[in-house]
Image (cartoon, rainbow, N blue to C red; front, top):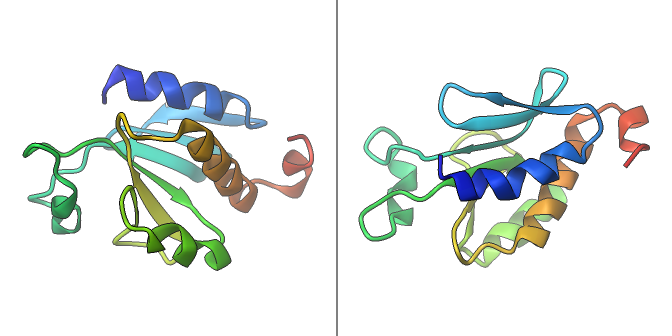
Length: 126
């Protein structure tokens, strides 16, 4: 995982009440209790062909997955790059991360993901 990506994501995760970071089977994820808020990794396009169209200079960039309210999902992915629907889960979106990334928007999206996964009393602490 590129350290500059983690350096941008860690402060976002740290401000979410009781959220924690942990290594995942691939990459790093942020969780609240046992629920995943966000997961950042570099997918293998050979094993997951859905990611192959996002190659940059022949390499797969870091991808962030997160939950999105169903009402917002279509609007988010309608503009295509850098967002697309994850090949799994009905309410899961992906963002291709890189120099183009709007980190304020990512912070907002991860806060929304947190609000979908966290208990109400923790959401109230935001």
